[in-house]
Length: 292
Image (cartoon, rainbow, N blue to C red; front, top):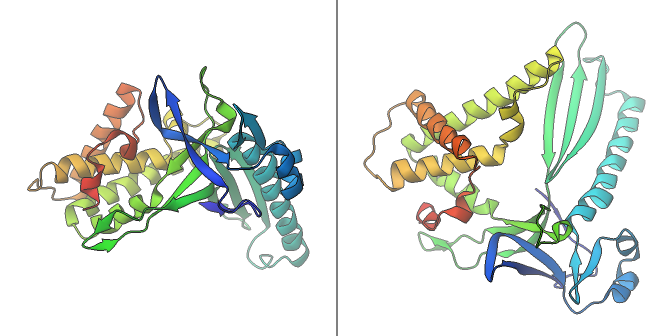
């Protein structure tokens, strides 16, 4: 995650729930600016205001996830790539081992995909993909504890505008608790059965990445599944696998990574057939079992 802050708006940006039919949509939120009007914001952060990232909605000023992603972070990444590319072109620190070095970016909300490619003399190119996800830290979880220790997991809001007739799509953010994910994975590494699930996760991720690379090298479009499934979705499937196999059935035996991979593929098949990619922390009321 690429955590950002807006100077002058410390303690002013507030997570505001989104309601539909009288119920809170837990997967999304607005970020509203407390106690400031558009006119006041022009004096505090003129460039951002002129970029249109603040929008008045029902008497409240909200931060546009779409415009801050497209007009601010896109420009920042492009400028950084241009500067770095020029520096590398001038100094050529890679000249002794590679023929060329290129940096490119693609906007893929909620991420910014940066690709580093090195072409070697007479050898296959080396490609490194980086996913930058702009995120605003909302707060720390000060209540969840593990073995008597407070976790203090950070909760972030990421740019995730969506379509919806009764929602202002440009203003929507998605709260993410990656701190919990890291904690669950840390705990999983202490259990051999869960390690097999993590191995299956790595195998699937590697397969999808390599499949896309092969298709690209051959000049063909990649299989649809490689573009639909993101790393996030695969992690969520791993959580469900660990929950249903081990937390629901503590004595369940899992003896090898091959069997874990078969279970992982079964969970993946269920999600694809249902046409619903999983979001563990939003859909499972028993997610706290994974933390205690």
